Image (cartoon, rainbow over all chains, first blue to last red; front, side):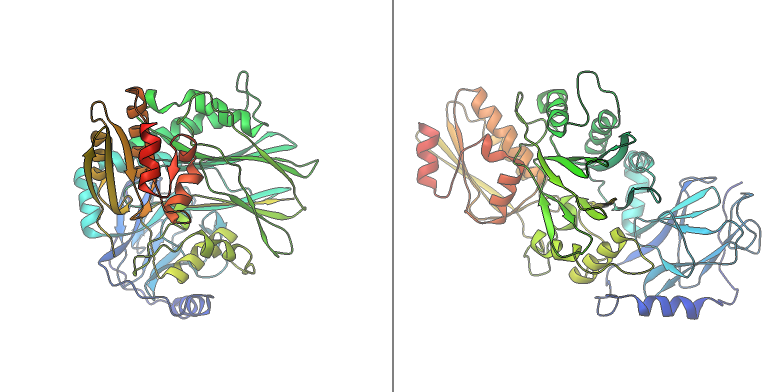
Length: 386
Length: 117
């Protein structure tokens, strides 16, 4: 059975709480109000009615298993009245309505009304809905012309790793895709119980070809047992990718790579950046951000290139920030670049309660630049290295 | 405020100088990147790409520069770039390692000499 949406006529008991949450959010005041024609949508990306797009209006919508819910999913893990989504001060908020199995935003069970940022996912039962903030024209064009692009976007999203919430190494991330579909993709895994690998790639250009190339490269990086390549050696891994994905034999595609390997026992991090800007390591005291960068060329550019790697000790509990250039290459209204020099200081700002680190930074970038969405993919992965 | 990018060229002897202005990114004109590759294929000429008035260079432009450099080199000629030291464009050139493939200068005359050497 598919989902159905109706106008909400129910009173909104949670409205006051939602409003308080938004007003109380640090950095939330003073942000320019978007003056464009973009609309908030929830798109079903997993579960029944996959692909269905639900437009959010001024009235809230109740999600549940049966009417009188406005959006009904035939899902035994969803309560009759599960959660309510509303627009509060121009942002999409969700409040749990006393469900049995909980409501999740970006993989975290919410205990209070919570903002769902564009690109973030809302999970109820076995259903996952992604928040999109796009103009109707853009959506219509996507529907008419870019069905393949939409499919590619969904496929790429399905490859993103689960957040790690427990253990010595924990992760959280945010990927807010741009309308054109960028070539960002990232991942992480344990090579063995003592060795954690994390990587982010950014393929030049945009569209399905860039996204599919990113998928191909990621499929190599995800393998734990590559013949003849030690995945614990970042420089060797970069060299292997470089030989495998030369631009002449891959449609002229190039990509930047940041690849790191954390040794839990030794407390060390080996890394390489191939045509990619630095990742940053912030110690538990959040005093400064250490750039982790090596001078190497893009993957696919020069056959036979010898890649170099770097190495650093990691104080237990440090935070590693790996990100794409879309988080800082932001053109301001005056035509100037916002730039990495403005982005890095955000990393050492104090953590905030009731939000993840990646989301804190996304909100800080939005607040600082005044933009709600960006021209390129906004991809940021944060790993706590314990 | 998007700054439109433009591409022009002039030929002097055995050197073609290609000038790109504005902002070469995904919001700009992809055809400029395509045009750069086309213009670099001038028969028998070395190429100087002048980026000194370019305000921003994104990956689509990086890819075009690399493709152009490989095309020029494959024909037995040379390519050089003109980029303002300290600019964001220079940062992109260095971060991606393009300067390890194509020599970079901060003035056109030095770039032309390198292209003809």
